[in-house]
Length: 459
Image 1 (cartoon, rainbow, N blue to C red):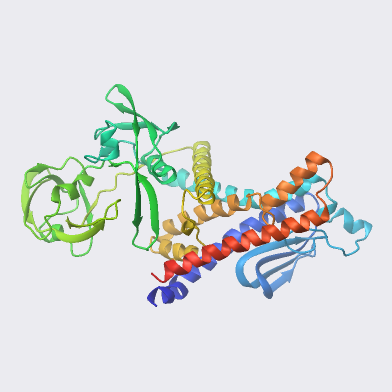
Image 2 (tube, rainbow, N blue to C red; image 1 turned 180 degrees about the vertical axis):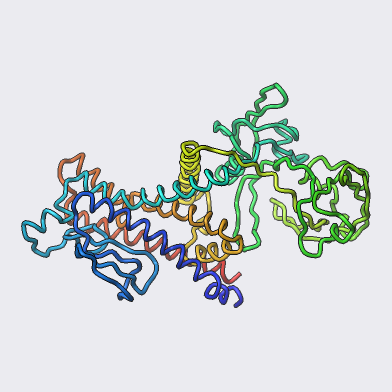
């Protein structure tokens, strides 16, 4: 019940705000390109259903906000509806025909349809460009801490190695490694890594893993048995931290736990092991002085990749922020934005292909409820969290609409490609059948996604 109340009181307002912005960007892309070709837009609507508020501009376009805030449309002159899928049977004058959508050349119609998805992608690039130019591009070096006995250790990697290529793809940041873990699951991956001056090669066989995050989302990935190599410096504490109660402060460098050296931050849980509730002697460095204290770790239940549950000890400390920021000039910021959007695009299509081919389960499809939850959760991270969500969803909205499914922009483009190759448009009956099939596919996908959302909400 609490989750349902939160959905309407916390998540929904942010969801409507984010979705309205992205729908406006998408539809304005169609509208702007259409106006460049002299096509008259009769209606520009945010939402569907009855009009709540609206006005008509001097060009005769009705701008309105409608009751159901789950999308929007631009209805051009001569369209049968807001999908621009079929022409209207309404007779048009000679002057109106010049400004009607379906009387335009093929390239103009294709450009108008492409304008919506491109607007979303360009919007994401512009936002990323601004962030990277002002604050720099977040960057974590791909230097790894190798978990003892894990897949990477079995492949011969050691802590301190720098990953150069993974599965044939160049690795620039540690985040690229995390993306590879998500995308390729348990598929064996070739690895190229640098150790000192030597460039070494091997193959990692990831361990398939499922975990549930604190928002009850199931995350599936191929565990490589590596972590980011982070110095064991205290960056903060979680509530009721036994380490803070024992006198540790932010900035302290952990040296050893019960005499065992702490080489890197992610090594701490291994050193504590199952010693929850037992006193441990922790040595640390503060301002160049070696000190020690006694800490009693709190117990925590964790589930490993095999599904087994273990009790582990926690100090309840957070690592110091090790993310670097690479400065760029304007051109470099644009290029970094393009690279990030391209990475999100390839991840989307790869993940969707894995769902279609049953490599990934269909329960990873999410709908409006999951998006609403993501919007509400992002709000807790402040404007940076909201901005990251807007960028990610703008990319998803753009690339999803490019799928070659009738009813979507990509479906229209597929029909225009047929028209370009054959020299004539697809037959009207075939178009109508395609629209029905596309409608069924989109509705079916929406129902599955909503069902998944409801299951997530009721957990």
